[in-house]
Image (cartoon, rainbow, N blue to C red; front, side, top):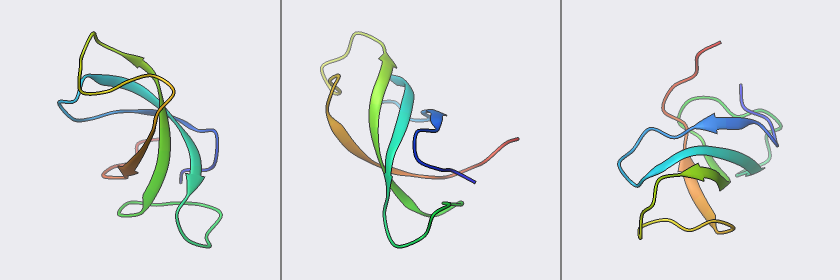
Length: 65
């Protein structure tokens, strides 16, 4: 269950490590696996693929409590 302002761990090879959810796509208040969200990056490695203060689309692939 992902809400707005939830900190998320990024699982891909773009170089991003930590992201924050800023908006849920659709009319729901809580997102689950398979939903799209808008994120902005907090922590990342030195990479040319991603930049700070840029909005990216994210797909939720797994949730652990």
